[in-house]
Amino acid sequence: MQRTLSWALSILFHAVVAVGLLHSVDLPPLPQIELMEVELTDVREPEPIIPMPAPAPAPEPPAAQPPPDELPAAAPLPMDKTVVLDDAPPEQAPAPEPETAPEPEPETEVVEISPTKTLPPEKPAEDGLPEKIYVRKDATVHRGAEARFGRALMGDYFSYSSQEFSGQFRTKDDRVISIIDARNTKYGRFLIYDSKNKTLRRLKQAFGKYVYTIGPSVDADEPVTGSVTFLAKNDRIERFILVTDEDRIAHYPVKVHVREEELSFDGPAGPLAARLSRPPYDGNHAGVVVVHGPECADPGMVQAFTRTLSMHDLAALTFSPRGCAAEPPAPAGSGALAEDAAAAYGFLKAHSSIGADKAGIWGAGPGVPAALSAAMLAKPGFLVCMLTDGLAPGDLPDPKALARLDLPVLWLVTGRKTAEWRPLIKTLEALRDKEKLAFTIVVAPAKTSREVLEAEGGQSSWVEQVADDHASLAASWISSIGPPPAAQ
Image (cartoon, rainbow, N blue to C red; front, top):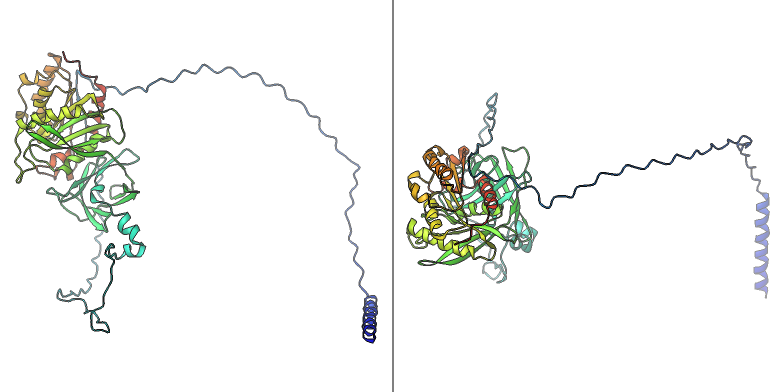
């Protein structure tokens, strides 16, 4: 009881002391703040709202003409005249000469390393045996970038075959860059052909697997004139970065993925291996049997030509002449080649992706005589004769044999020696004008660059035929001709 009373008195005492202290504090008075006084005696009257007049009715628009069902087609090549084209490459300004010769760099001391030097001996383990490195049997040892960034990313996922590098690539300004697989030819490398500058040059593998440098010609790697860096998308090469001395900016050509397949057809002497190149999309395409001559040409060089045709919606079937698969190769000759070309035309005409009335034969260079003979045997829907420097005028049939060609024929005279074909052109013009044969004659001199001129040899004609203009011209002519007349 006493303890409770003492707690109550203590609390009361402290409360009285706290109240006394609060009353003893003298706080300064708060300053009076002057307020702005506003007299609302002058009120502006609101301006009257004047209604706007009603707008006049808009005049009725003229009746829109219905759009045409089809776009106007390009004018076809004339059948009664000879067309001469100019295929000269763009002139390049000469490089300015330096005003003063650069000072030679100071020679640095070079210490040659002896070829007899080897790696230091392996440090033995505690048990006396050399140190062991355990590797899984189902794995591969990777180094460098593959080890740093992961085996699945750098080692496996992007390990594309070198065959993916070759193909036709197109830029935004409709420029075509061809990567030609000429590793099995006398060039021994990938080649790059530029349809704009008409240059043919050599590629050399530089850094890793996807970076190549461009040499000054097909026979030299230095001085370097540019670089090509291949880029991938998903599971195939999609584009590359092109940097050259001729261009101020880099280009990113996109690959045109034409469809290619290996097949075989029955020839007069047995089955023959063939390769079919088709456009990227499905459809009722026009197609040609490409006859490149009685000699055994490298498939990589021929593919550069057939891929150019497939870029322009034209399927192309090629085959090797008889005897090219033998060891050593022994081609059978032009007679057997004509028979095989006729059989190849029958196979192409029956293909499901080729229109029955859109199949023909294409003779290129030395293959023109065999293509003419095959056309007389098979009676195709059309015939393209591409006369190049690899063919002599005396190799063609006489005018009587040419007069029996009762089908549309495109005579494409190209190369650097078109003047040698003037007698033949006059003969063809006489057959066209007097005999009313469906002959279209186009003279397209190939005034190529120095790089192409230096690419001499048996395979150089294939390099020169990687001309996108010629392929588009022939594809346009094929699409303009009608279906062949029905056989009586």
